[in-house]
Length: 500
Image (cartoon, rainbow, N blue to C red; front, top):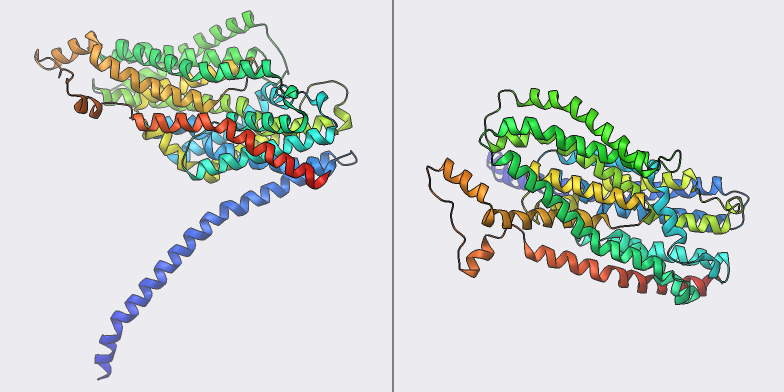
């Protein structure tokens, strides 16, 4: 009788244990999600303490501390939404794991922000609206705070919705909206806005074109050659040298926050020399990795893995140099308006301001970034290491060029534009390349490759780029600036009514 009861009770016990296990797993998931929020709050408090210590004894110290926390919140949102563009291609191509991508991006984001982020940050701080036109420094401070709040909230919403939007659009729209609400539309420097808007239009096209050109070169000179490995041993070091040379030229031409400056002509020479040295060093490494590889595309993916990782790191550096301004630009505007020590006319952003932006971006990436990395890396078009290398290298070159001219461009525009450029070029090349056709015929005993179908439905099925993602992303770009501007104006009017 007792044994029968035990047998009958055993399934119930198993069910109870299963329920307990499920509850434990659910609790762990919830706590894990809240852990990121808790770490973020601690970072905001540390940021306020740092700002308070550096601004102690000056008017508006509380406003500076609160603005610093808002800048840190904005930086974490940039890391969660924007940095995905830097390593998404490499992750999508399976050249690196998610963990490796997060660590590399975090390190080089910090380096780019601290070494080369001053110029663009100064543009956002005072080049969008004129601080001198505002009724008082306090009003200007409220406007910058409103811009940070509106931009960060909009980016936060977009991240939760899995939409890779432009954080540059968000903050520029926020500054315009708050500035117009605070001091009228005449306070907005429309000539500077025109230059920035033109760069927003040109940059994704430029990123796509450069990426397509690199991919064309790789297809013509490496992929569709009889001896792929020999071609790769010749040309992969050249591509790595071009990448290293572009980075060296940028660093030489003032890419160190004004620590030193080399004229553009000499900077190009420095880049050329550095590129040649990199080529000489890289060539034996590539040859060693190529030993024993079969003459097929899978082997090429192995050879492109290291260049792809390097290009993703370079793009992260470039992003840190340009997009850290979206967080620290308004903060520096507030500090320069309220802090007496910056009244000497020098346009040098305090190091602690840059540190807040640099570490905030990296923290946001580590805590919340993996969600969007998968979208940019795999859901627009299929990427392998060669295509991903073209995306990362073209994006890095475009962003570094803009940073050299202190123009706040959208790295999201450029990176996503490069991804679309690669996909659209592949569609064109598949249909029109005579070299590809001859190569496939030679491999298929004279059999021609499959001809394009005249059936529109079948043609759409064969597209290598998902048009639906294109329309979704472009729509998000279009609405971001006006939404941020309107939201920022509302936030400013509320702040102004409550505290003045």
